[in-house]
Image: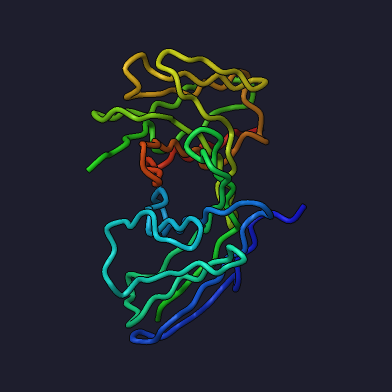
Length: 114
Length: 110
C-alpha cells in the first residue's frame, strides 16, 4: 500500500512568488491535514480538510489556502512568498478518529524561499 | 493557545544507557501521541495514549500519560544507535489539530 505521497519533494522559489504543494492521502483516508515545520521546531498546524470541507485552520495568514478534491487529495497554496515561509511542509492523512489512532505523515516538501 | 513543552531539547548518550523525555502542558488533552522523525522524513507514529494514567510499552520504549492528561513521558531502556532521531509529542483535542512540542533530538553513540 502506498503511504501518504507529497510532491514535489524539494522546491526553490523567489520572494513574492506563488507555490502549490500536493498531497495524496492513504487510500480510504478522507482527512488531510497540513503542517509547517521550520528547522529546529515541531510541526505547526495549518489546515485540516475532511470530505472536501475545511475543518480547522491554524494561525497562518490568508496567504495560505488549501483545498481538497473529490478523490481526497489536497493542495496547499501559498501566495506572495516570504523568506520566513522556508520550511518543511508536511501532509498527514487519517481515518476518522485520527486523534485516537494517529496520523500518517508524508515525507514532506522542502520549500526554500530565496 | 495550547502549548506543549518538551525536555530536554537535546540528549546525547552512550549505547546501553536509559533515558526519559518529558512533555508538559498546562492544558488538558484528549490524547497524546508520540512520533519519531528522521532527517528528511515525516514524523512516524510510535504510540497514542488516551486515558489518564495510561502506560503503554513498545519493546524498549515505555510511554505514560499523566493522570490529569496534561503531561506525558517517554522512557527508553538500553538505548541503541537505531533509536537516534527527533522525538515529538503531540496533543490532540476534540478538534482536528495536533499541537506538537518542539521535539527532543536524541543521539545514541555506539
